Length: 365
Image (tube, rainbow, N blue to C red; front, side, top):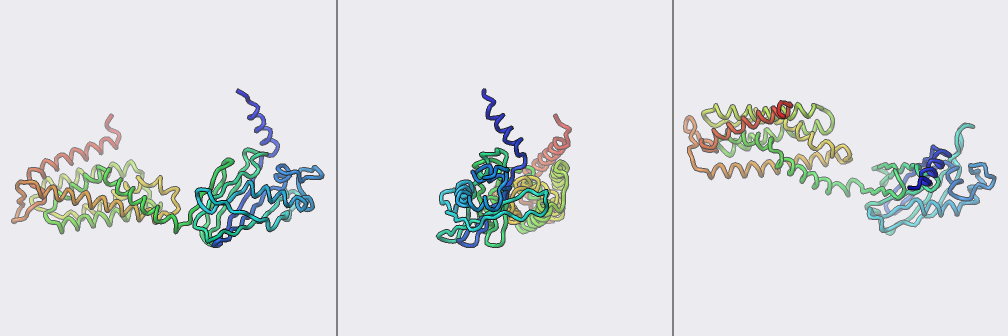
């Protein structure tokens, strides 16, 4: 194995450890302007402009190398009119100058402004920056996109050839909304503890109207805590939330086992729904950490949870109504589930809730 490339990179870095630039891409309809600000010595190292060999550029040297600088920037800072990087914009150098030095110890910086006109207003764009990597592999450029005078996004180019793919919020919003709806549906349909709690609520009721009331209370409650937790207004350790969810299943199932007539447990649905909302939030927290459209994602995820919840409850209600058996309660009332299903079902849910609690408390192997 040859270590020559490593020694070369180390030597380059040691010669100028602080190598950085900043760039701003401004989009105004079909017009795109790029402003690049960098240490003047970086241009002196990348191009044969330093006539007096002092390691920096003066105004005369920079002016005489205008075409070389323009060509270098066009080759090493590319902007595309699409996120795939297929339609490159052609830029013209409008301004090139040394920034005023505020004090004698400050390093001189060069600023360049380039502009391009696309055939139509841009819907998205991509940026590829390879500025000064040939002289310092650890060079970093901080790029900021200003979209039509409003929305801003920033990106630190970590390595040569990396691409900053940008879509404005109005373009991204439908896709984000749809993807989080799907995530919400998947979460509720694979969240067996949440489904078990809904089943415990369903075993207590006798009419469709009661079911709708209970589900509405559960929905309102978990929507509130889901929003508060994902927006970082409320924080509870996920371990305790998961333990409380397990206990909620066992508690409601115990009430079901002891009851003699149907009951719409909307109070339990609301109170424990607040806890379940914190559980929903913990499942989506990592994804929302890097998602700028948090409100859109939150609404989509919550809607997905509701769609999955309604599908699960609707299917369970239909299946329970089809089962034969005695549904009679006190005072001529009837349960949705027959007694032969309701009582064993409550026992199973109690044991399941207690097992999940012991498991989440760390009491099981």
